[in-house]
Amino acid sequence: MREFDTTFIVQPEISEEGREALILKLRGVLERSGAVPLEVDDMGKKKLAFEIKRFQKGHYLSLFYLDKGQSVAELERAMRIDESVLRWLTVRREDSITDVEARKARAVDLERLRKERAAERAVREAEERAQREAARLAGESVEETSSDDDSEDDDDFQAPVLDDTDDDDDDKSPVGE
Image 1 (cartoon, rainbow, N blue to C red):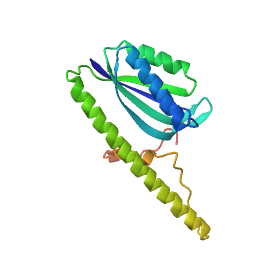
Image 2 (image 1 turned 90 degrees about the vertical axis):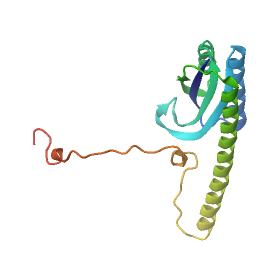
Image 3 (image 1 turned 180 degrees about the vertical axis):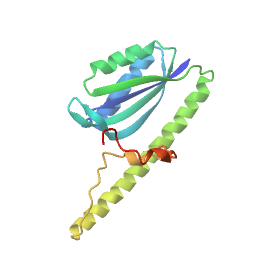
């Protein structure tokens, strides 16, 4: 079996119940076509790089599953039909998974860890909102932050380091000047 990752973006206004219903529907599609659904990574709302169907933000989700390759087309067909799905991308993560049970166990652990992080983030965001509200009521100026765009909240992200050691280009002016 191969491991696949389908990352998709849904409309930002969709409720949590709507997202859960969509995930259950997509898991059902996978199970009916013979795939083994592993885990779902809810990455939250983020600003889109460009506008899609007049939306500037989207709710990002990733669905991980094991399959021989036949269910990918069926899953993408189901997403194409659903109007709440804005975009999707499916990639093959691994070519050969021999120990399916070990991968399922790892998926359960990852799912638990993601839920713990989401709960911690929710508590932190509630505290920050309360602090901003208290500062606003006290008459202090408060810098508004968007809780919808938690791109800087990703613990695993590290910005690439650019090495600009070539100093001989610094004194060149553009052509024509």
